Length: 307
Length: 187
Image (cartoon, rainbow over all chains, first blue to last red; front, side, top):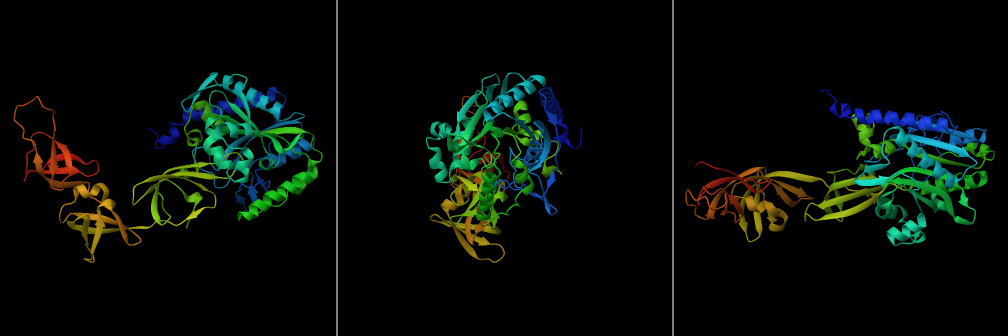
């Protein structure tokens, strides 16, 4: 018997993980996307209130490849995807690991609604490619992966599951707590759920709804209560983007956190970016869902604690 | 000081001046939202459990518990008297703080007393203690109609189930973790 039994027994999970990565690449290539690689080590991450980067010398390990990939979009790369490691300080739990694998893709000339459809097609295609049935069992729930998937506006989810108005929750600083306690566990139970139209202040890089500026064209995908992906119609207005980054940095300062340098090159090039939609999907969590793994630890070769 | 990111199962912290132990812990972070640390906490004095959610940046004082070797002396009403093996100082712990431990205290028993801010909050017993049976039903040898155990009371007033062949006045060993009969002691 292998000395490192906990690693040896993960072989089936890691084999399936490899299959999933292959199937993801196959899907995008067949759809006319091409795979890109951007630096993991960057001068500064996009300023966001609750995402903290791990320093690497005077620079940082990226928290997502978002800024670099958008610069590529602005330079005329219209359909791109990337599978890469990302790092976020202090995120550790049964669904979080500070170094994780993100799939991020951008598609110009579509909006967040069309992106939801593309995301569902990706997951259905990958599932069938790796031999996962249309009805999966995850956390003792049978979830049907066939279309159509559930779509519910954030405002409606607050009303239905928390009996609270979304605006009220925001005003009282309880938005996240209600989301975690009352809403997330109800999402993606019979079918995967897209929850969409987040409050404007919860989408720092997203475009606002043209007819309702209090809402951002942003969505999250949940399967069996687990958050799997976050996507939005991209904001392409550099002045507005700068104001939002400044506000996020202001929030960070207020919380006693370090403030990140303004990504000037990104802001400069943003004016050339076409209307696009982009999304980040957690590969570790996708593997968890397909394998019914109770913890993210089950689907990676090594956790930080095992090194 | 601890901050929310130090939280994990087994951590002992002070809340509203009481020591608590974290018995359940989960990190959650809704998309782009703030980190939330959901916990269940057991009050180490009252034993009551409460649900608490902490946010990033929340800070708390570690509950440092001191352990001292002591000997149980005697009981007076609901006050239990102990003597510190090192300093010979005597202390009193009330019945409520002792919890189940009160069932297994016999004169001169060595225990570990847990103190929080110099206040005794409980005792840690040896895994096995010997106690004398003071009351139990008679058992007629060869009678197989009855169950394979009978009720008994030991010298501390504690009641438990013992095998039929153990009689009044006999000494038995009890496992203090389960509160159950373990063996009969040959004297």
